[in-house]
Each structure stands twice: as C-alpha cells, then as structure tokens.
Amino acid sequence: MSSWTEPGTVSTISLISMAKGVDVSLLDTVSFQHITRILEVIDDLDISREAVEIPLSPASPGVVRRLPNGKLEIVVDADLPFDEWVQTLPEKVRAQMPDD
Image (cartoon, rainbow, N blue to C red; front, side):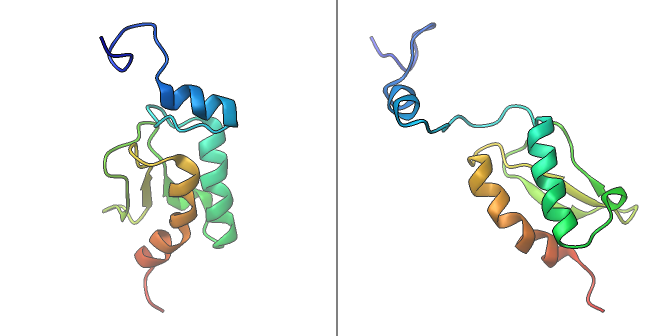
C-alpha cells in the first residue's frame, strides 16, 4: 500500500517539505499573488499591464507568446515550482519583444 495513492495521506516529500517550510506543490490555479508577481516583472520591463494577458489556468508546458491581437500571453508552467518559473520570465518576455 503506497502513501502516494492512498486518499487522505500525506507523501513523505510533502512532510519533509512542510518540516523545512518549503512548498513544492505544483500549480493548478494561478492566484492573485502569482499574478501580482508576474505583473512586477512586467513593470520592471517597462511593459504596459494592458498589453499582457495572464490566463488563470496554468499549462504544461507554460508559454510566453505574442497573440494575433499584439498582446503578450503569459501562461504559467504547471509543472515547475512558481518561484523557479518566475525567475525565467524576464528572459522569456524579452524574447517576444520586437527588435527596435
């Protein structure tokens, strides 16, 4: 019998993570706090918030792409810890910016 599949049990990884104060859970919804952190990155890059769309559902893999309407779509990666993913966001956004 495995604690990985039994309903109502906590995995060993979760217990170790909770003991160390680390959240290793993967996303199923993009929260207001996540959006705030994404918008901080956008602000630092001097991009208008009106030029960005952030879906509330993460995807695997996440993506940063230019939409046909010209807006930048930022889809959070569901398989990566958010803190790790958001550190890569500035590079991904810059890659989608037009060369002037």
